[in-house]
Image (cartoon, rainbow, N blue to C red; front, side, top):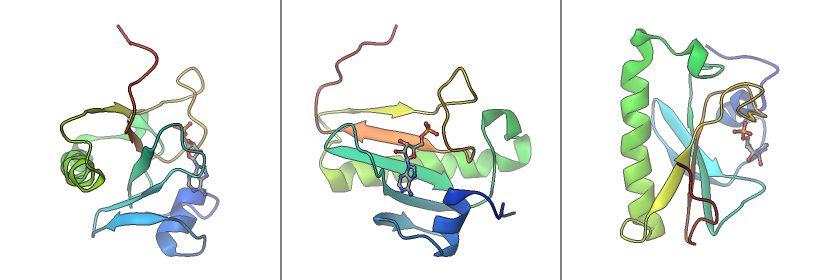
Length: 116
Ligand code: AMP
């Protein structure tokens, strides 16, 4: 369930501090230490799932909960109407730095780069 070397597992356990904005049985969310926008929150499953390649059907409920937490947090942050970007980096080419699956919720300003 937990990976002793993982910084996000340490935050989940309370062994490392974080600016926590949400916690329930499945998910923790905290502000990114290096924000790229006024709202930059990481939505993190408590279960240690390394990345999307480590995500299996048994975890589908977790993903659903992650997206519901995004909606709740967007409302709290006041960015429901203005909009936001969700990013999940996976692996080396995806630019993933922390090998514990997470969503970035980024908003509060217009995104500079259009994707697609
Ligand atoms: P990624 O590149 O998708 O793995 O994103 C990892 C994110 O975690 C980066 O945006 C970091 O700024 C952020 N981060 C790393 N350590 C911490 C920490 N202790 N508390 C909050 N955010 C962190």
